[in-house]
Image 1 (cartoon, one colour):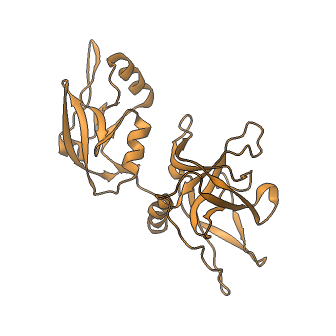
Image 2: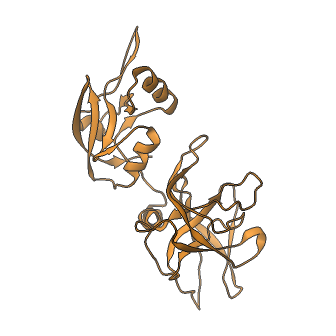
Image 3: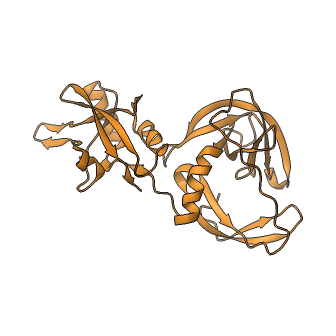
Length: 264
């Protein structure tokens, strides 16, 4: 956790300490990249694995610093995949690995490894009313890391792929409840955006209230029923990709190709 921190110290296995510089961070992925200057005896990198092919029940190992106990190793299995955390007071973190390997305060930022010692995730959070491990821990998948980290190193920030539309969580829930249609209501199409170029339509205001324009109900063949789901599907793409946005317009379904632009 780097939020509110004034400095960070990285301690290597041989006891050397280094003051780290922040390269970049992405709140929506709960990822930060730190840099240290190691003049000699550079530590070997952890072998990189994959997370798209993980299976529930697969054995995993977590390494961290729980309660200040350095180099602690715990073991367990993959309990579930594609979990979501947060979304109430901040952005939701999507596609998390759930594991029953003991993860406690201090494990965050440590690696989650497969049985071959390859990195498959970064430990990020636990679910625990007591604050100690309850056998429900979460890790950011390595496939997400491999997509986000290079951008953080290059640009210092991660630009989410976007359509160029304005949406609102609370208003969307109200409009969906009133219309009975499950999807994402486009409130406004940003001028000069990819959405405007593609011809997507926003809602209109009148004395009678808000009249929905296009309602997004799918993306590249996958159904969309919420804003978090739409953002999650977009986050799997890259700026410049062309996606097929399925919308409900005047009671009819149609697909609109949109070239993704940089978002916030």
